[in-house]
Amino acid sequence: MIPFDQYARHDDSRMFEWIDGALELLPSLSRAQERVRDLLLELLGEYVEMSGIGLVIPAPFAIRMPEEMRRGREPDLLFIPNEFIETVQESYVNSHGVGLVVEITDARNRRLDRIEKFHDYQLAGIPEYWIIDVERREASFFVLERRRYARVPTDETGYYYSRTLKGFAFAPAMLWS
Picture 1 (cartoon, rainbow, N blue to C red):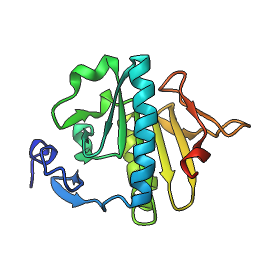
Picture 2 (cartoon, helix red, strand yellow; picture 1 turned 45 degrees about the vertical axis):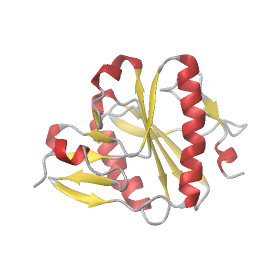
Picture 3 (tube, helix red, strand yellow; picture 1 turned 90 degrees about the vertical axis):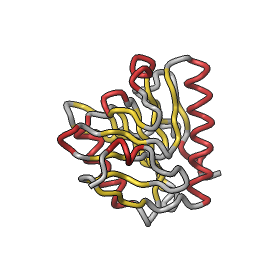
Picture 4 (tube, helix red, strand yellow; picture 1 turned 120 degrees about the horizontal axis):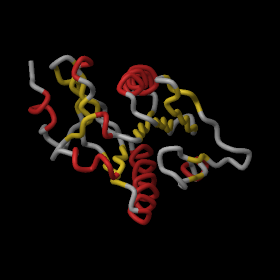
């Protein structure tokens, strides 16, 4: 049994998640996943910095889920609104301080991101969750409504308007070009 605090300080060269006191190794990102992550990090990071609304953090960085869940998750990207920045620790943040989580998936971790993490982020009350599937070239966006995730489509021009990052919009199709 490994305590959460020890897990959160793990070696940054590999990504792990903490499930019921045990470490679960996550697959390394493929080149396609890295490219999409880096592009989103640049877009989100620039928007958040220019608007002064919070902080965007790439993996490896843990989210400590509510105590009763006994989980530590490591999303590919996460957004912390200004009002929760003071809660950010050196290697993790508690889930109540997270406004947006982004997972960049492929066949190796699609089930984990679409089912297990979807459930955990929903249960933890994280307001917005994006799943970007590099193999299928599709982006799915979810917002918390009455404690359950509801899928939000892009508009008729192909743009997605974030509810958490007020004023931020992008066309997911640009991720594949």
